[in-house]
Amino acid sequence: MKAKTKIDKIERGVAGPVLGDVFAWGAAEGLRVLPGQLAAYATESGLDPRHLPREVDREAAARRAVTEAAAFAKVATKTIVTNPGAIVWAAVDSTIPDTAQIGDAVGVLTNRILYRKIEGDLSVEHDSPLAEDVLRRFTALVGTVGWRAIRDAVVHYLADWSAVRLWGTGAQYFVPKEHALELRQLRRFLHLLGAEAGCIPIPDCDDAREAVGVAVRRQVCDEIDRLRVEVDRWREGDGSPRASTLEARIASYAKLREELSAFSAALSVGVKDLEADLGELIRDASDLLAGGCAPEAAGPAPPVGGVIVETAPAPPPRPVVPPPADDLGGLSDRELRKLAKDRGLEARGLGRSELLGILAP
Image 1 (cartoon, helix red, strand yellow):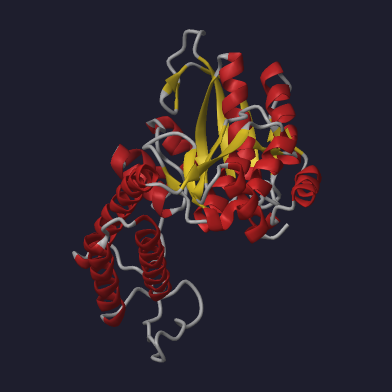
Image 2 (cartoon, helix red, strand yellow):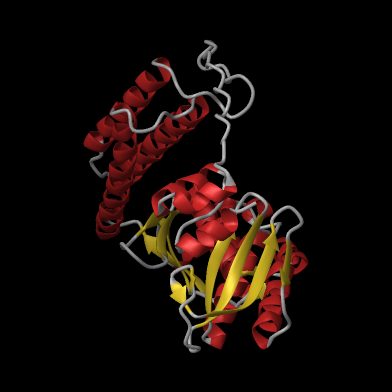
């Protein structure tokens, strides 16, 4: 069904022109779906699958499995190692009197849980009920897509359709009538998943225009305030954004200004001040871009407005010269933490004995 035909049917149903829809959906926190089933539901509903999750974040699944299993078993788990290759959690029994400090907990270390980032594998040092529960949860999480990822996809779709949140919190959005067809495809998709979702057509009248106009202004004001903080921080020298980062920001500011102009025409809401604010953001970001940026992570900076932005090569990293093992004990806790950071090790929350343990060869 074409979008124009869908709008015509909606307008006949409400006996007049519509401004758009109020779209609301309910959370389905326990929902987990196989990736193949997710794609099948998108096909059945007609929803473009571009924002649907395709791969599961295995590291996030490992972290969640450890956190949930520990909470269920009422056992403390502390991160004792984090580096580019692995994460290690310690299971701590705080009910056994002991003076050992493990992270920010005091007790007896009963197990270690290891996640290898490159392989994407989770393993345990000893068999135990906690270890079995962690592995079971991890297997379930990496094999299915959860509600959080689906919720994020819904928000991406709504952003594409210039949706406006009607209240400060909650999942109620106004979606312009031009996206009536896609919105109903999304509603059908959520229904197939077992989640609640609904579309309420809004008649094109003065009261509706005023209500939506207030929401548009509030949302854009909040976004401009957030963007202004970021740009002002860069102008004051706090951080040096790359050319590609500034280009992306300028494009997003321009897109927001276009959407604002479209809403202004449709809702008869005054937005001249907001358009001026966005214009100022674009000028400030353009000045930063012209004034030089941080080097890109890899390769030359892309052309900007026909001009090649030259960036200096990144300086080579300074070698970390570790002190002899015998000298570690003479370092203060602060010096030990700095040495661990220089070696790429996670030292937050570790006591002195743990710091010495991870730094010793």
